[in-house]
Amino acid sequence: MKPKIIVTRDIPDEVESKLKEYFQVSFNREDKVFSNDILIKAMENADGIVCTVTDIFTDKLLSLPKKKVKIIANIGVGVDHIDLQSAKINNVIVTNTPDVLTEATVDVATLLLLSVTRNTFLLEKMLRRGEWKGFSLTENLGIDVRGKILGIVGMGRIGKAFAKRASEVFGMKVLYYNRSPVKDLKFEASVRFDLDALLEESDVISLHLSSDAGNKNFISKSRMKKIKHSSFLINTSRGDVIDQMALIDLLEKKKIAGAGLDVFLNEPNVPLKLRQLSNVTLYPHIGSATRETRTKMGLLAVENLIAFFNEKNVINQL
Image (cartoon, rainbow, N blue to C red):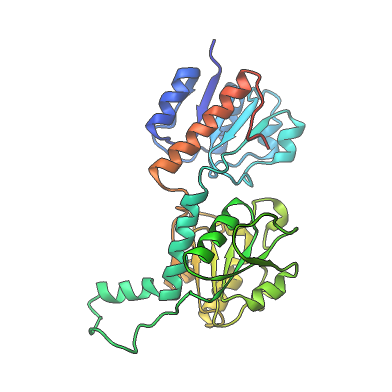
């Protein structure tokens, strides 16, 4: 009999077809986030679960006495919504889908870079309201990113790819903060082991931190005070890596030039104060949101499942 798989959210057609080929599958046609009670039933009735960042797997779920699930295949890179330590103790394999979403996420980071430095959100809003009075040589000016310093916080796959594009396409000077120097870079970049120094030097700071517990509030209120008033902050990693309320305060008081955010604390609840600000560009967690990328992510999750149930090495096991 084919292993039983429960999919927690709606998935691309090609991914669904691949799952049906190898497994007995239960789909979430309504695409509504599973309640904890439904997740309990899934853990007790399925051999494997395909999930996303919206599904919270706590120690209580992973250690259920009647747990049947042997593998959780997460569609996404970050797994901060899964208690990895508990999964290991309770013999539940956890996999993710790295690599395939790198360029799509870099595209969104690029959009945010250009949007905040050219103030496009405010200007488009002005245009739509009929407030534009025509061409001016001195009004509605942004800044040129060429020659500016980009500070990358976290030089993983996405951090490196964004730094490379910023360097080669936009002519930005790259600094990066990482726990260790990154070898074999194909573009010019300088490491800063002192995060405060990077924040003080950079004209644009872009966050690409992993989703482990040690990175929560990594960009704290005290650290944000190191950022120049003329600088911009971009976050495409996770909402909890930054002190969101402190950032709102800095933006309100114009102690930072602007911010571009694709992720938030307690999604999808975005504070009204943040939504009302004119010096911030906000996207609803769309870093990997292209048809091609989401399909690749889903297919990689399926490949992880196939490998596991065929007792082969699971490439993306955490």
